[in-house]
Image 1 (cartoon, helix red, strand yellow):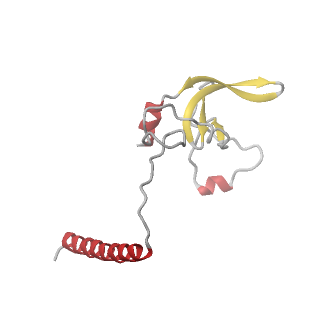
Image 2 (cartoon, rainbow, N blue to C red):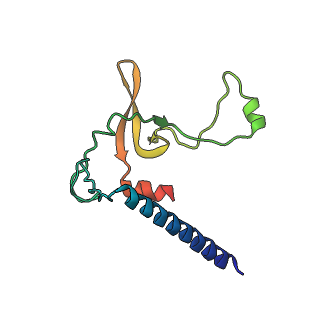
Image 3 (cartoon, helix red, strand yellow):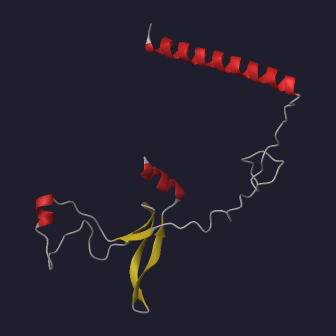
Length: 142
């Protein structure tokens, strides 16, 4: 018997057991006078009525206060552990970016934009120069 036949047999056995369980529960429900109840579908606004996933505007209030981690990346490099252990104060690590290239803006590790460094009130900031489109973000996930 092949693996596929084994799976089919196991799934059929599970379905038979569940069918038997359902019949036992139905008999118990009838003896107790329990009636089945049909549930309404939920709409995008959390109310009852329209089917979930309809084209109505989705209310984002529930997720607007969720914190995310945003970071700016100057560049990257790869070094051996031997060279990593040799680093000390004053060491210079060469990155894969040229001076003047835009920095990457990452939200929870996903690239969403690029920008240039600015100073505002003695603090560093980033002026966004390029926003990555959702289609481009999906391409980078593959």
